Amino acid sequence: MYKHILALDPSGNFHEGKGTTGWVLMNYKEKLIARGYISAKNYSCPEEYWDAHINLIEQNHKKYGDTLIVVMEDYVLYRDKATNQTNSKIETCRLLGVLQHTCWKLKQPYSMQLAASVKQRWSDDLLFREHIIFRDKRNIIHTDSGMSLGLVHTRDAFRHAMHYIVCRNNDSKPTYKPHTKGAYNNVRSNY
Image (tube, rainbow, N blue to C red; front, top):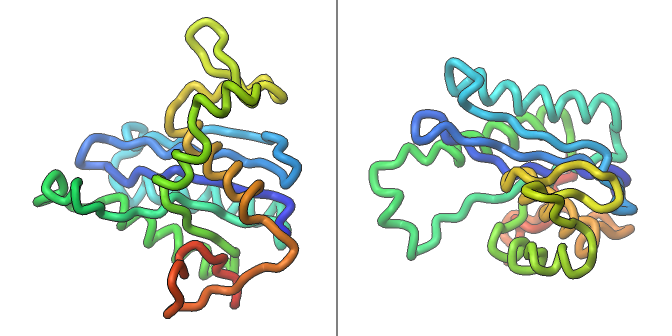
């Protein structure tokens, strides 16, 4: 079981729309510790933008060590979206590769999760109904911490953290098995 979860909803888009990566840091008891975002518009080139992500992972790795897992939304090109990606540089895939390599270099366990299953399980409707978040005028607030989760990318990172904590963070740490169905949903921790 991991005591700290750094969850990212990565957007690698730099040239194709200046993306924003949302992130949250939570503990295994569902306590929101910190949250934020990294916006491509604040950087002069993709590599500088990627470096901000690397720094976030390195800082939390240094602070939390073996008690941390990095959870990232995986990128899958769905058939119905494939035409929209024609001639795309698929920048998010590049960012994910950088983040996976960073975790590998640090010997930092990480896990990839599909957006479709996480967003379906942790919809805004469910989060409001269970009083995990509430609307305060035009903002969406995390009930227990009082922190804003108004930015969609940060709220999506929150969904990934919640999904990992509730559904996947158990005492046995599964290892990555490259030729197993669902391998991308396993923790990469066999360094």
